[in-house]
Length: 341
Image (tube, rainbow, N blue to C red; front, side, top):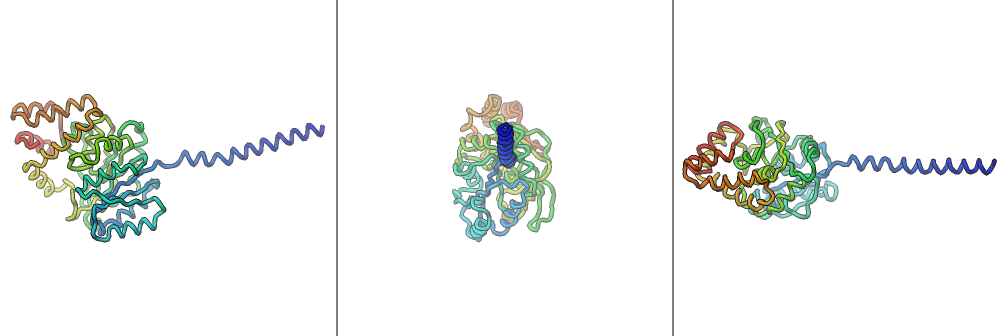
């Protein structure tokens, strides 16, 4: 009897220990399951001392907290670098990294970060130095990106709230209602790069094309690459940031009549045609990754641009290219008519 009692007692103690160890392991497993995906914020700076603090502070308020910040400075000669170093010392180790930019313009600077092999994350978010992010910007982007299979290129973007230098609201950016597509991307970017967050599959395509592609802007390029290679794009109609408008903006919004007139002037001077030359050359670096349909659209578009008037208009129409607004499409027709496309 004593022997049986002893055996029962030993079994009871052993089971209790096993269960206890299992109970201790469960919280760690649950924690691992709820770890947020890592986001690398790609921020380019140049003499941004006046507004940079507000942007850095808005990163700290993000509901999605698993992010690291990579800054490429393009040769600032104000206190930008000192401000960044102060934040680097204040934040946890590895939260902020600073590198030197190529000093070849804003697009080249952003692409140098995009293609930097030291940077690795689940998702990547472009950021300007003078905006202010809303607290759920990254959270909303990641929630949508997680619905896309990781091997499918995916790009999140949104509207913006335009504000003046003192953060007084001016208006919202234009609401686009037409679908995102490669045919649209050939003619415009659907949103500013400062709203864009993309997955690793999209990043691999951008890296494959290289940091030296002859493109005008990195937002337009990202939209072209993702749509051209059969990826998914989500345009969030809810603004994700305050887009500050000031005299130092390198690329401003086109929501005002003054900005639209400026773009019409640039179009007639041949700037739009030159940008398309660069985009076409860059896309040919990814020819093997474009869908068959988009390869055909690209080649038809490239050839149609140099045809005579009637054939040019006919073949551009066959390409199905379009912009998001009535006025934009009117301008597109004028550009095609005068061979400025």
